[in-house]
Length: 327
Ligand code: SAM
Ligand code: SF4
Image (tube, rainbow, N blue to C red; front, side):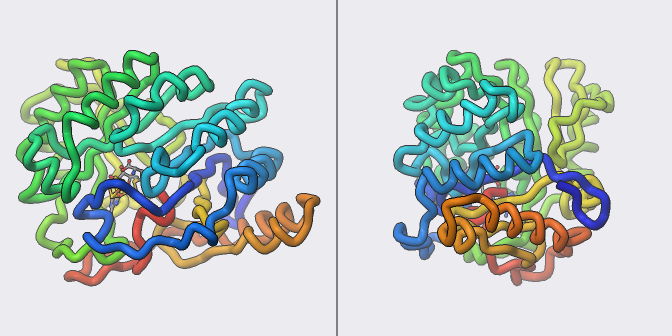
């Protein structure tokens, strides 16, 4: 699957639900209107679309959301996708989760063939965690992370760095995750969706975070890539990798290898643009995959060159929340 700029798309992020049991301040507003359940693609339909993407050349699928583990029956889809891994047509199925239900599912995820999970963790302080997620229980997430590690899943911690909110504990998060053998990846907050919060006040460029960390740790540039936009350094003191996802200060679009599918079957060709294609209609119009294949191939040709994110006062650059496309 090549687009008109010569980029090959091999990575599908699948937002299996836009719902979530948390309300992170940079991601959602307190009161959210979610997609009605009747508009969701069924798990069988999601599996079928994934099958077509795999035939077209997708090699990695990441399940995300919203919170993927709140979607009813999600393990059925994990097992269905894992069979492509067993057959060798897919390299891996991974998951990005907030960790609240990970303790319950870690064993089955590992048994199904999932090898890596990304878990979001923005603070190790229970009160701050509760404020940042608007009611989350830190202990539950930490238990989920331990269960994942015990089940043999490689865990990468994802942390959105926010000025004046968690910037003072980023080094501690490095130490905490490093001591447990987890990589950590810092993410710049992107202006997506109304969150009821002032984004400019909390925007923190990761160049600053990296400079601060470099005063405390020895950071060597690493060539490690996971196929995503993160750029890594190796931390000598802790032995872990520290990643930086910098959509705002460094545009990584020239090497973009991904597309995103929402739980209603909308294909997003760029996280930061409105270019989309509806896959639900071709999926439902015919039992054969021809229409679906044609719709995907046509859409790919419209993949934009790059995003236009700017932190502009309080206005989100995109009205759509990150939970629709899954980050
Ligand atoms: N609920 C899961 C979780 O939190 O990991 C998966 C979905 S969440 C949308 C995926 C990732 O996007 C998380 O690491 C989250 O921190 C990040 N994220 C959400 N909104 C964001 C924003 N506006 N800017 C940057 N990252 C964001
Ligand atoms: Fe939910 Fe993840 Fe968004 Fe937080 S970042 S509100 S956990 S979807």
